[in-house]
Image (cartoon, rainbow, N blue to C red; front, top):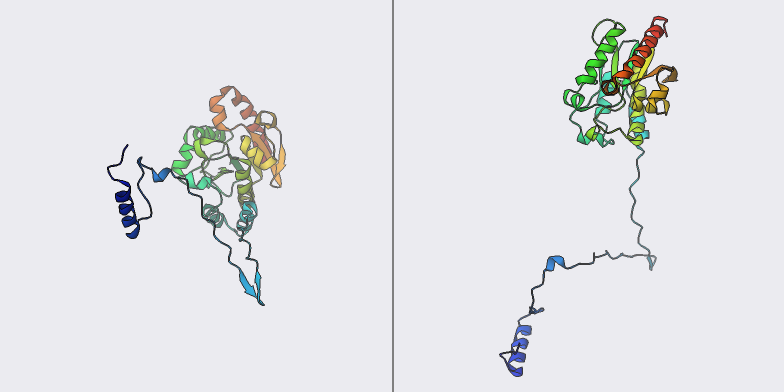
Length: 264
């Protein structure tokens, strides 16, 4: 494109703009400044002078990593009652599951019971109600307890809790790290209730207490955890999906009933 100005006119106009303080000229094509890649500006190290000689700047301070399991153990050790433990655990901020859960699910039933049932983690119904073993799985658990002359509210009632007090997203299994983070609270929980027998319901409970998975292999076999006898049993949610396994669950419940009658 031929300019409408001659050389001398164009130069005079350019010099006039420079005198006005113009530092950039507009190109023939538009430029999107948001697409321009800018290198981050690195802060310059400032040197200090000591005894007349420059010294090297101090290195940046790295954040100190906090051991979540150790912190959980420290907090759990402070609890002397179930009420204190519930408050301490509900205020624990290092487990990300808390951020996505609706409610903190602690326990249900008689804390003076000789039988403690340790489940896995809250599901949708538990997350809404703030109560372990709600919904269909909870109804089946109540029937299982009734089969051995127990319930959650009467004189011969059981005590029910979970490894995890917060619901994992999409009901996924809690990670090994999340389980480890909660174990100091679980151990203190069982210590304060002091049951004669613990039922481990499902793979997550077995992994937490026995460091083993494979409920179909573990169920029906007595083991020791938390300094007391424990019995791995199929989770009610699994029994709802696999009714044929109810026969094995019934046999395991009878073994628990016999153990309690013998005085554990």
